[in-house]
Image (tube, rainbow, N blue to C red; front, side, top):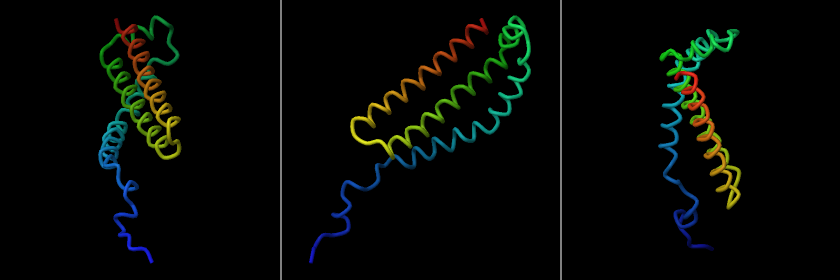
Length: 123
């Protein structure tokens, strides 16, 4: 018969104390995506089919450029957090850490290149 308490049995297997923070981050980004995605689709539709000069002129206006930039940032950060949750669940050890770093680097690189392209069109 073992005299180990339930608490002792699960030591090291409990909460990482990150779940609530992650949940709220995802809730806020999801709520931000509700108006941003239809607005982005509407704005993108306005530029679709135009010539290169028309598209540049369209995105040089502040409202379309700001909406596209906000959409890019919120969408990529939301997807990065979801990818991190999946990686933390299924990939362990050094491979997991390297995958998290690669995912973060790719996501922030994507944001940087997207914002650079928007700034290049807007200026």
